[in-house]
Image 1 (cartoon, rainbow, N blue to C red):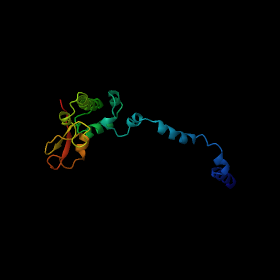
Image 2 (image 1 turned 135 degrees about the vertical axis):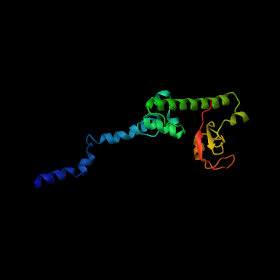
Image 3 (image 1 turned 60 degrees about the vertical axis):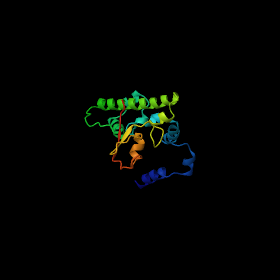
Length: 175
């Protein structure tokens, strides 16, 4: 028995000849993974089940249907939308769809203002005063000022207008 275990041990020890020979069938999968990672697109990586999702990851309404319940809840929570009464996935999807449409409409209003040349003093009033990129879509509590986008509002410790401590930044929907 000791002879057979020695042979088994010898087979597991790599030698110079084994390293120069072609790799076994299992190893090419490892080398093929690197090019696949390079070829993957952002859209493939975004909607992978179990991966964190945000509203900016959604490019069309079909993307919402592919999200898991956890991802839907995370999108709603990140945008300060209450989903506590939602028991079914379709209810969460409905709220994310509404949020997606609202965000899309806000961006269209901003771009239409740019195209019409109204983006001087009048157009700037709808832009976040911190990043000057996204539309104003959140209210800072306790003071109630609306001067930032949700992303910037989350990072504020005090209001840029009155310097009052920010308890919470709440996403708002304009009609």
